[in-house]
Image (cartoon, rainbow, N blue to C red; front, side, top):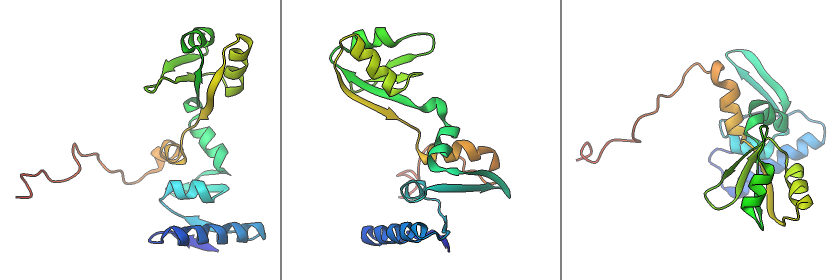
Length: 167
């Protein structure tokens, strides 16, 4: 089955129905191709991606592998603990960067969540929040297809006519 933009214009119930239908067809061994510009919808629906740009195969992989290949350095660990300063000092090294998030959490790059939790535990620091943050499918798609785009929008300094132009 080949579908192009199957959820455009549907209400929430219709979108869920389409997702269920696609999952059911795939579970029964059917091949379903879905073309869409809505990356968030594809991320919730697809298990495997085929990305073609300028007539060339760019990717034929799982959603998770696609995202990881596009932005492996973008994966960060978000952590809150009972002692943020001590945890930041403990984790910082030549391979690990630690920066403060605007809401008081730490953002750690270069060490997986398990390593952050283990280091905190070994130092007697209580972890209150620990989550891996990863690039979105949209971020990965833009990154991996940037050389295969024929037409690119030029960003404008503002998103529409000024108030003076509409009078």
